[in-house]
Length: 498
Image 1 (tube, rainbow, N blue to C red):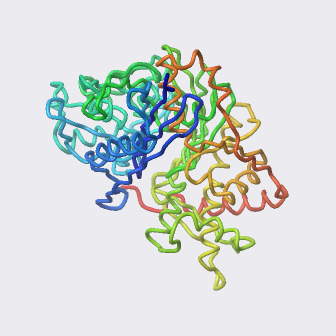
Image 2 (image 1 turned 180 degrees about the horizontal axis):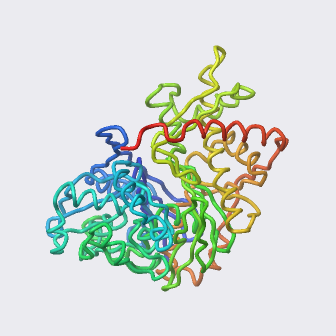
Image 3 (image 1 turned 90 degrees about the vertical axis):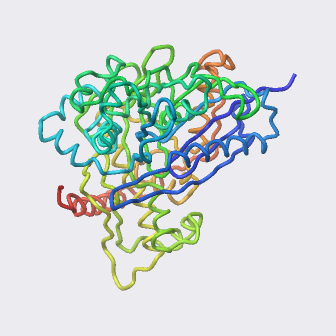
């Protein structure tokens, strides 16, 4: 009897990936297809919907071929996705009304300012666990309905709103299910995390017709059957999860207090807080971790908008690097940044600052500054921002984790991981499988498909690659953090409010 495998579709900000796993969590094949980023004007970020779909389909077919897997042996498919990115399409034709508005897009800052000025911040915070920000999907959907004058069509049920999980499920599954899971719903600023339902007050506030919204389902459970035209046979799609929630699951953070940080395009730190949402005033988000069999598990989250993206910026826009892989050796080739600090607020600052009008800053330059200092400052900035998130989480939850589990593309950078361990004064654990977002989606699908008896069965699948232990003197750490805070303060409120 042939062994079953699991497939994970990991639709990200800059590429669509598919990973094929054994039931033991071993990576059998990976295929990644990049696609274009569109910047119509400063602060605007878009994707072509067709690029999202076609790149995901291509990666799926390539991964199956690379793994030499018989499609009959794919027990289930799980989908993880870039969150908050917003799409709107015709329910009959599937044609999208506009390019996808990417989570990084800041075009709805004026709408957020209006909600804040009208005194709705506390209500939104209490219902959704979110800080009102252009990051989330709600005002993006409002912008599309307003700008394209599509609200009448939305009210009549002729349009479908969705984040990327919804868009993929609708396009890949027979019957075109219009669904999202609780993790993605919790990132829209329209979902009440306490009642686990779309919130009528919020819908009315943003004038969003309920008919345009998808059904909210469990994170692990039946979504639909993959259209047999794609791989030659129907395969059950058994999980939907926002990428950071999938990574939390894939990292084995099943217990309250467990914490992970994903170093991708952005950095996303989540702490499992169990069955009770931890509301706070520190700028952290209270969000879903996942929902299994109708039971919600919550998390605290902090988001860094420019994580690995800052290295991409150095490579693509400033030409300081030929490839991102060079950054580790170049950063390590100098003893320090020479007093240079970079605040990568290119698209504003997330938690704990939440300043939409902050912008990127490079300070401390001297005649002796060279590209190695700037590259090191960029890597250190990723760690500084993540340190600030962890500090706020510990204060709000009252729990100090035993370690920080890490994943994502930039987690392979040993310099960055060591500097992170030094700043937080805790071990940083990198698993053997850095594909933890995809692994989480695969395990959630496998759980729903009956490949595993319970969540407890999954703990044995966790394997460690390296542990980075703190080694910098704490007085030196505190001096560095003090100057970092000074740099951040100078970047705040740089551009005038619209």
